[in-house]
Image (tube, rainbow, N blue to C red; front, side, top):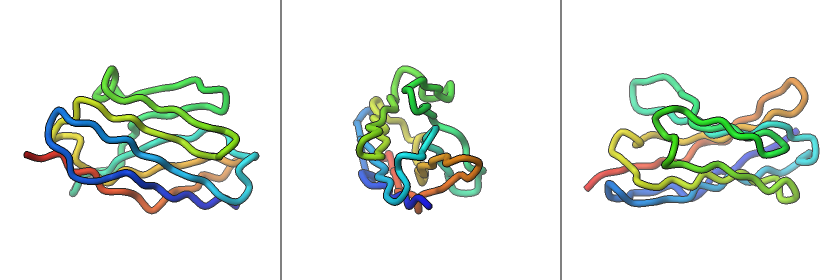
Length: 115
């Protein structure tokens, strides 16, 4: 099993930056792809970015050029550097991790972009 804990969320002004972290514990050496998703109030949970074990990345069109996903396999941690934040980026951000055919989720961290 894998447990995921996100951190780094908060309130930031438009144009600002935040760095989210997601630390895995448990069977971290079995983790394959990891990712970040977000869910705004009243909306479905959407993909933000994913990264394979070998650091191949994929981004939603809405965050390309502004967000960067990275990971540290030794620590079982995935990061999301978010720059040029917009009010539309306001959401609860969740990380996930795939181990064999099981996907584990964190509890989420709130990101609010507002002046």
